[in-house]
Length: 177
Image (cartoon, rainbow, N blue to C red):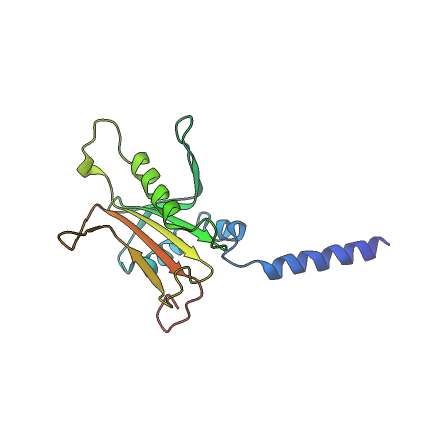
């Protein structure tokens, strides 16, 4: 009887392992935890910056807000050698990946990175990156970069906030594929 129960538990464990992939929150956390070289490689590919150097990195970074405001927990949060900040969000489901959530993540990083008395120009550039299992926008692109625009002048707003949606279904010949 004990052997049968142990064998059944073993089969259940194997089935759980088969369903895991890097898009799972727990698995991603284990992959990235204390692994700056991996995070750096991923960010270099996603941002197209081959010389990007990550100096600090943390998984499951709590960004606690004041009473009454919504707090968030960033899947992966890092800083590069130029002081730019990166939030990597791994999403299996489309629910929770919308533009308003990306905007909120970006704004919380802004609040966290400007101390009282600092000039607004000292606000570091931020990258909020949603890696989605499916093609969130459905256009077959590998990455969907999102930037604010001055619509009247038809020029980039250049506020230093960058939002990227990465298509986890994309399979091309590039490093990202």
